[in-house]
Amino acid sequence: MLKPTKILVPTDFSGYSDAALKQAVDIAEEYGAEVHVLHVVEVRIHSMYEYEFAGKTASAAGIRRLESKMVKTAETRMQEYLAKPIAGKKVKVIPRVVKGSPIKEILKFQNENGIDLIVISSLGHSGLAEYFIGGVARNVLKGSTCPVLLTKG
Image 1 (cartoon, helix red, strand yellow):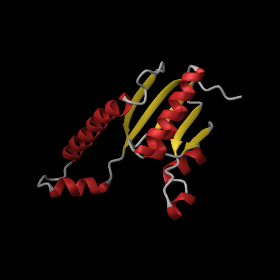
Image 2: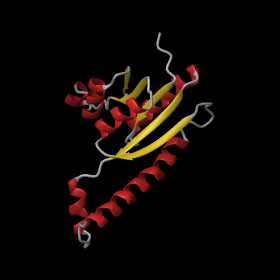
Image 3: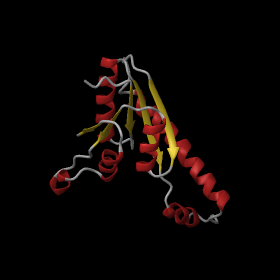
Image 4: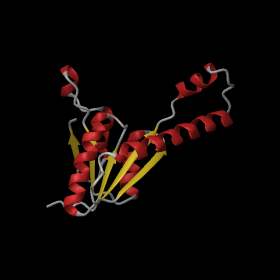
């Protein structure tokens, strides 16, 4: 039987991710596991155009400033995001914000940190979309070397 010690919850701060976090916290509380909550800031090329549209020249330094601002904003959101689901729970929660491609960073984090369970939202929408797992969740499921629990919000 799986008795996780380190649980990873990738989040995009959505309501769907809330369900995954709550499930992970419940599992962690039962087994005495720690919960790692990971948000990946994906800086896409369109960010450069938005930066230029704001009247600033897109330079390497400017893009680094934009990335830094995005990471700081995500770190603030992470603290707000974690406040409610872990209130009153006796669980060690370790938040982390990184830059990169979500799928690659999630799998890299899993491998580098000895994660033995990933709890991720399947992004269950209505209509045709309910038959498909979200792209990130599907690829994490395919690439993970540990069990993955898909949740529906």
